[in-house]
Length: 187
Image (cartoon, helix red, strand yellow):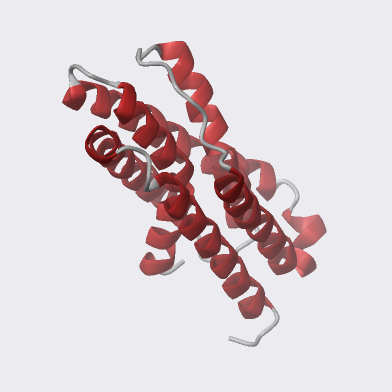
């Protein structure tokens, strides 16, 4: 996978967590840097681990679906992208409490990284993917985006959450389209 595609994919995957980070930044009043680091670590770690899990689950199925892998990858990424866009348009941002706690962060981290699990599955059926480098890039970018999201949320509110999710959904659809077009030999 080219580095630009991986960076765009990582940014797309981070958009749900970014939206939550913006909302959390709105509610947090004290220890902003510490809380931003904790939130970024939770989201970053989950976004990095989930593709690895999806990758190894997908590797077990590759021999059965190899001929259709590019269509499956497109389908998964397109559905995730459309879901992100619909959630953003419908107002999928939830209200968050003003307290930072482990249970809440675990639930939010899992909820925002389910799409990363599906992306890991697509990595398993795509040639030339180093899952550990890809997972590390996804995790680091998610950490940075969420760390900044907490600060942006505290400064500007959550007005950027919906456009970011729409943009992330569009990028997922475009990456899925690229995988499919490569698979059928158009590009």
